[in-house]
Image (cartoon, rainbow, N blue to C red; front, side):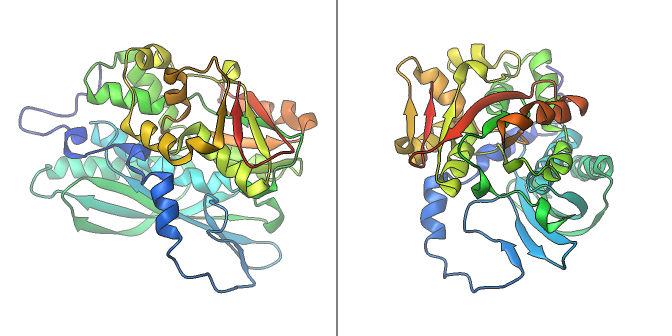
Length: 353
């Protein structure tokens, strides 16, 4: 396995954190309980998207031609190579801009590091990786904030722009829409195998390639009127983020387990018991809103709840647009993109067959 940035005198980045990547997220059930204590948001006429429907970012209308998209995302190491950790964290943060149908314009770095534990060279590598991902996206890291932290934490506050009519919300899916997933699943399983030091070179390369691939197709998809809703699949797993669309749109999501794309080796590792703790926490939070067919076993259930770091876009579009949506993904190098389900009239649930 090629993640060999640590030395006998330098601790593995993943050894310094109790969880990694989007697996660090607070479980959705706990988060919902915490947010329920927040005071009601005051009405602002220009606030197009707030925190009412679990959308990926906030959106503020600047004028008739421009809407500002703002988001933040940060987490603890998912890999031991500092540079790759920085790239992954930055790519993940920018994904929220793309998921709203916008183009990123700049970012601020959020940095928490155990200064007396990690060598300065390692910390510098994390920052360089984040800057490289932003450079690939064509934007600057224009500032940020840093603290001395017990665990290594890195991410971005990111901003983007879109035309107001191109903003894609979770709640605008329509009955009859098909669901298209842009990336293969299984990042959480691969990261768990990495932490156990049992991940092979092919699995590691696949994980890095997936988690550092910018979700640029979101810009083009945002301009398509028959793309109705969009989100990205991250810490709550495919089931959790599908359920967000179902609840916001007031529809039932039907997923086809046989159509789901998987990263190499993921299903074998899961069958061997390599499962993340976050997968179980996810199921405990939303399992009562999921209907699994009898053939869906415990391993597949865990895979469906597997937290994805820098995961793919999940797109709800008219059936007539599915071919064009897939063409957008494939033309930008997302070979795994596939139709994975549809939406229908019914209660706000997810069913899997």
